[in-house]
Image 1 (spheres, one colour):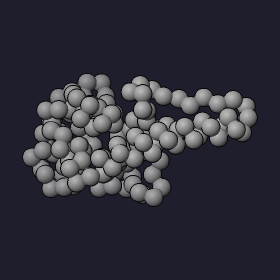
Image 2: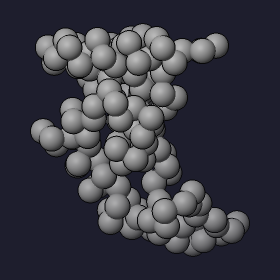
Image 3: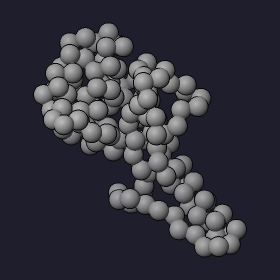
Image 4: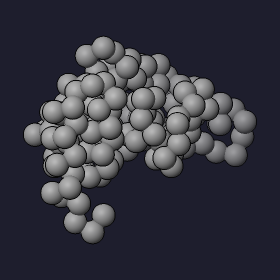
Length: 137
């Protein structure tokens, strides 16, 4: 199960203004897989409707027990999206509760987000880190 988060104040992956009611996980800047195991998790099923229903119940349970909390923390006023520092970009998946992208893409998104919040000094710091590490990106 894939989860995506995206600050609505910045363009989505395609460069468009995000529609919070219709954004797809593939358009979100930060993505992760949901798991209660700490590793990638899949819900296998057989050919029967009951088998599919059981897999859906199990996946729904993990979302209710883990996903809601993770998404709630990411949407809170003290969200890791708002508190991560430029010096922590190399650890962004850990700091962002498993959500991430490439370091350079994370810098771009976080720089844009800080700028939208009026935090220009931090915005510039994320942008500078990203430019220094752009490589072939």
